[in-house]
Image 1: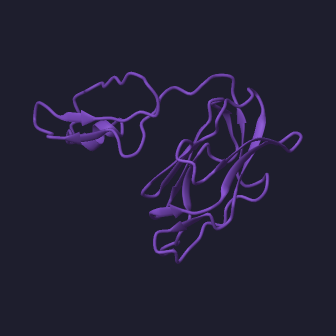
Image 2: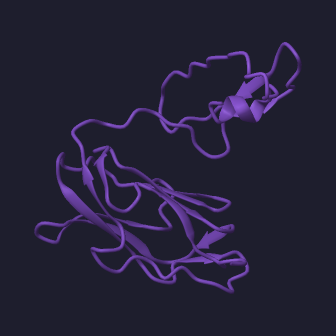
Length: 173
């Protein structure tokens, strides 16, 4: 297969998802670090093609870029039990060298989803939790959440064929 080049490798919500939170935290994960330029992201109701919200990619109040991650949130809640799609301007996101640009999302078939009825609970952002000082009997965990909330950890003895490591704790194994 070989390298695939500059592309989206994950999205939240993933196209076609249902029960998406009405408080609308979104992200795209790219195959390499990104930069954003002039452009916008719009969310539109699928039933009647009405604009719900639009934000500029330059608006740091609603958009954040960390390495290969684009995080964004619209300024208000979405309607529950509603089909939406997202439009994202072509060429507004590129790799850091500027040699490849993201083609964007230009129609209702590219990035679409249905909302549920509840807000989303807080979730980990960026590269957290991060574990340091992992020893036989201890470790230090650093976490960052997208909203106020509590974090609980369960520490269990690893299976006989597994070594206890921070990454196993992070990935829930």
